[in-house]
Length: 372
Image 1: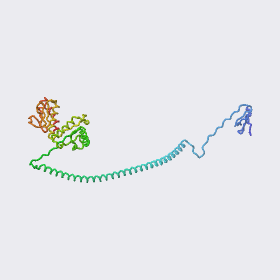
Image 2: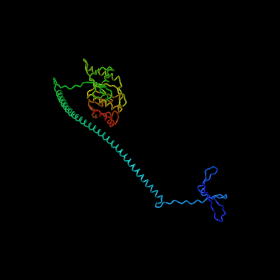
Image 3: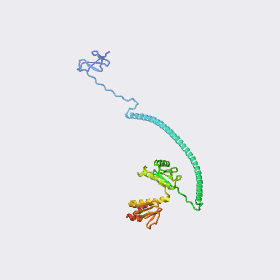
Image 4: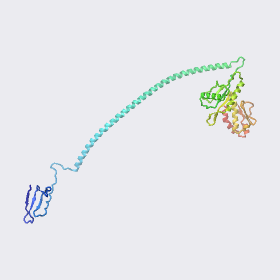
């Protein structure tokens, strides 16, 4: 429905009367949607309508009895909310942390208990081992005491046997003379490493002498120790063989070994180690031979005349340029000095070699030390 009204102008106005369309009015143009005209003044004379001035909208006022909303109030409310949320979050985190710490402590306690059990078990095993060791030591102590007693008894028996043997040796023979103990002759075969086991040395020596067809008897051969590089073979005369024939047979075997010139290995200095065989001499004769050997070495080290050097091993005598310079027999010159079982004339050697006496003494000193 439409509601229209006429607006009257004041007297004297030249404006034509206008009609006011109320807000409920609507008008349809060319079938389009209705258009509402609100508070619009229409000029009946065809002039362009004028819009009314918009009325001022009054601002809202707070209700009576309430405080106005300010920024400080909003900030205070936010702070309270944040504090409450932070307190709740902190309480929840503290609870979770306490639970995690409790679980971790429980695991640590379990591991400590397991370690304690393992250590206790090991200590018990060690204690048991110590007890067993103590028992073994006690048994060994008893055994040592028994062994000591048996050793003392054995020593007493040996001393008694030595006394009886001394009495037998001092007893006069039926002819009224005392018999001196005889030394059994022997020969030595060597050339192997001194650290070689005794059985290996003995087996190798027997095999190599058999290959060389040396006419010797090896039934009584032995090695004087656990590890040696040589064997000792006692010399025994065969049936209907004289002592001279026996020594001749052994000398032939020595010559055969020397001629074979067999290498057995290498020495520590790199030189080849060769098989050798020699007839064992009594201690006195060996000392005489050593004196002759050391004197010969002294002369050769000081460039003596090898062509005019003569050596007699059985007496330890050495001649250089037809002059005796060392010996264990004969008259000792006034300028000679003691050397092992005999003497040596260092002044005569220095004179023949035209060398200072101190040089000869210094060269002889290490050689003489081996004669003691």
